[in-house]
Image (cartoon, rainbow, N blue to C red; front, side, top):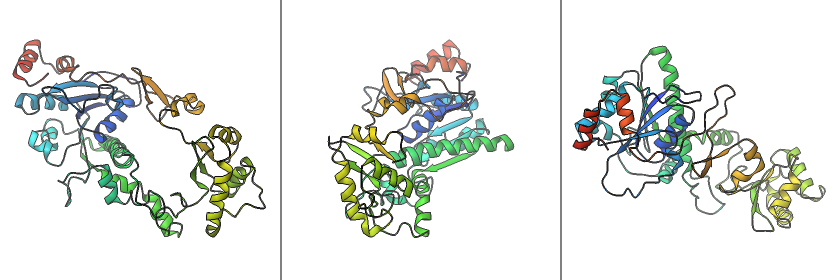
Amino acid sequence: MNARKAGPLSGLRVVELAGLAPAPFACTILADLGADVVRIDRVTEGEDVLAMPKDPLLRGRRTIGVNTKTPEGVEVVLRLAERADVFVEGFRPGVTERMGLGPSDVHARNPRVVYGRITGWGQDGPLAHTAGHDINYIGLSGALHPIGRRGERPVPPVNFLADFGGGGMYLAMGVLAALFERQTSGRGQVVDASMVDGSALLTTHLFGLRASGLWEGERGENILDGGAPFYDTYETADGRYVAVGAIETKFFAALAEVLELDPGTVPSHLDPTQWPRLREVLADAIGKRTRDELVARAEGTDACLTPVLSPWEAPEHPHNAARATFVDIGGVVQPAPGPKFDRTPPETPRPPHPRGADTAGVLEELGFDGDEIRSLRESGAIS
């Protein structure tokens, strides 16, 4: 493992056991920032129906095909772990232990390894061994309940909150914290990242709002959940949408000016009893113009009115283009690495390698000779 790259994590060595969504996202973050990530892809026969060769979650790392159901395959992974700083897995509790690749197995070879684990429910607790998905985890954590319109059912926010914000990002943060601590102790440790815990952490501010009396209504009746007419989305004359976030008085005044509303006739935006009437006023004014007309009128002001762009439109917006927020990798436009660093900027990630494409090269770095590699391939331990 010696693929040196640019970025603040250059020189960091990561072993990733192939999985779905949160674990790959955590490793993508690390790889984006310069870490040398080697992904252990399973050796399978036939077509993998879940394979997405251009998946941005697989960018920027090398991949080796290993049959971890064989002792020889497990030994290959442990040899990698001996030189690694971080080991990441996203299986249910106990799976890697049964594989011979649990924390104790890895730490026996390298006690400095930070062993990152991401699960839905956590490594323990009554639900630890049951199946689930993003929607289940945010349902339990309280993050799903506030999302939706008044009097309607909760709306799943795609799978952003548990899989990615409260999952992969949460795990990456934990791994980096453990690496910082290792500078003092010289020892690795296990990072137990649960998507329930992580998505619960994302709701922290709601507890402060509730304690302050600023979040007392039901779903869709509060200041940040679409209940307030000055913090919501509106349809425009061309069937598109704009986002309005004019909370503060001076920002709301700027919004009223952009919409050419008479200040003497606009209901007070700070009086909840006036919110139904204010919503009608804003919807009427916004609905008379196209999205782009409204955006042009709001440009350069503090009206807090912006377009609602699709993910496919977002890369073309001048602000995103100026900051290179998106990048083309192998013909696929996708979010660029972030955040930005002034001294150690990361390089543009490489496109995903075909599964197992780097097997021979990585094994050679580990000291396997040609005969050993040939023997491992013939036995089915590697591909």
